[in-house]
Length: 481
Image 1 (cartoon, rainbow, N blue to C red):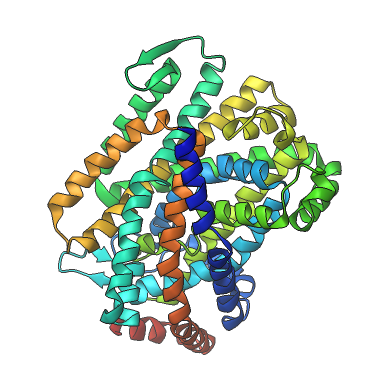
Image 2 (image 1 turned 90 degrees about the horizontal axis):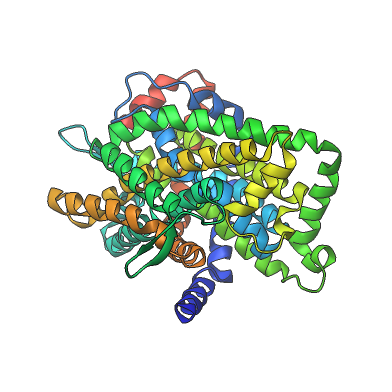
């Protein structure tokens, strides 16, 4: 198994090497400049439209429902476990690179949402299909269809073997075990797999049943579940993180200084055992992309289902997802970990690091803090599983030309992957997820570079007409194109 992990790490280091990080960061920077820092100028408007659905829009779910579906896939283990993993591997400086990547990623996510609606296809039954595979094929031309299929293939793999199943279920089962059976006193020997806590086994069975019940209902059921669970759990998690930060408010300035210093000179903070700033950047950017999915190309698949006539409007709504996911939630998780020194505790990994931070940073009994974190992680990861099934099915639908039978087979394979997820090792799970994330990002970022002019033109035209109180004309023209 150790040899297998070494091979995975070597592949991961190659995929997430400097070229891909530069591609993602430069892509976000290019869009930021071409859009004149739209993520700052238009953030208040984006937050307003986030909760105000467009009337008479065309699509399967409301704009807010599409955003919640996208957030259901992004707000997950990446916010709780991924941040901890990044800081433990790359030092506190990884959080700096995560937030910086998210800032540029807001422009990237805006472009993805805009292009998803502009180039989407709505069939006779009102079924909305869209995402990178369609804006590659229709925006860049049919000669690039191979690139669209490449994205769709890796999208299926990422959902089935990485970010959609194994990492989420592994995070849930670890959190449940750490709370109910931290010392593995109640165990069972599973043939070919080894000895596992009953807490892990029961958690995997219950989770598999609930996932199966929701997935049978398709996008509308996923959206309806997400609209209830995502806002409630996100607010609850943020409230507890704010309590932790305010309880340690006098130490926040030092923590921020530590994070910034470690981003450029890790040894000045961590001593001789620290890695280089390249490692901090790599872990921060990779985990940031895992969490908010900006540049990955997954969120525009949900955005394409939004009931809207205007690509720019949905682009702004999509942009808020990265802001909420990383700049708000991941930053709070990272600050909690740095403030409590959780990343420096020997023998802790994954969810254990964030659990330590909550137990030692909140003014509540340790069991209460651990229970709150476990509950948040369970619901975050559960909705992520649902969202990524939808993404993967749309990718497979594109690859198979809309045939229904492969979708049904895939759905059952997905449910099986959820069931076996808890029995995968933590390091292998996250490495596999990183690899497929990177392979998805490459074709999507190529498309965003190629279509950045279209994004800039659509944006300029929309806001010029909106300034002249001609919003309805903009929406009508956009829907006719």
